[in-house]
Length: 90
Image (tube, rainbow, N blue to C red):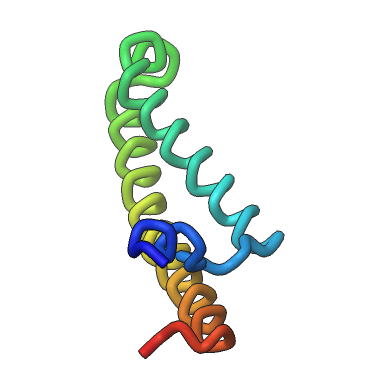
């Protein structure tokens, strides 16, 4: 079998569980919210003030970074367990 065909047939990651799907969607929402706060800072600044916008952006940035680390650790654990189950990991 050609290498490219073998690679196409090899599972690359575990099937996404409902918990991982929820975590991925939460992470995406955090990223979008952070982009909206940073990108739409002008109108938001008029409503709540500059220090409040900076505090919200910082809190979202730290929260997103921590959640990213948590998600990646759980995703890596799920992928490793799945590949171990299949006997693909060496």
